[in-house]
Length: 289
Image (cartoon, rainbow, N blue to C red):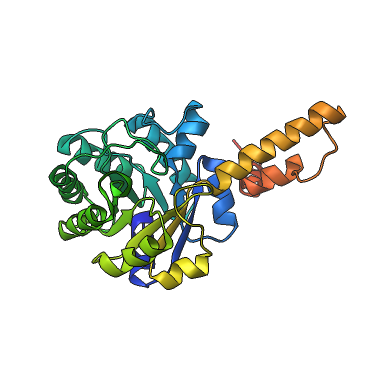
């Protein structure tokens, strides 16, 4: 079973999927080793780690796909990838689906922002008309070659056109074949409760530290009826804080080899599967040419 099939099976089994946000192969591997069933390739993290830029729609489709491809090749669990707005009209949307699918992603989410977009939890977003969004979702659904490939329709219009329009867009996207709906950045507990009740299909919640939505426990998210929760910034924020702490310790103590909360080089290699490569090296060494 491929990655998309494994993600589809998780959904068919009614499992509650917690997908921490990863931004490179190392963070993706960490999610897998921690025992989670899926990974979310965060666009914010991809833009930050690969480009050193904010999540303002500055990453191209090929740059986003390249990151998804590398992560999918590193782990065995499914990678759900940010595909921004699909990078154009319906034709671009079709190619976007083909590229993510071909490079091993299990699914993508597509949003209704005007491109270049912004992080969904920032202010002053703009969205395209509802019919254009629905047309792009329909194109994405039609374009996939693997029926297990997951299409998540994300609407960012809650802060722009209001909650009622966000619910209407989510339902319209599901009606043309989207597998799940993501109403981005609900602004109150009441909205978070209503989304799974009023959206006529399985729902995804995206939670960010310091975002526009209340922070809930995973148990509470599941009890509200969400099928998937994306923890977009959990590793990115932790990594940046750890970088700053380690570098500050080195700078102030002048002792780069003795500070806490770090891994020895042998442990880093072990995490990355060095034992498998050592075995291969040993086997090759026994071959008589």
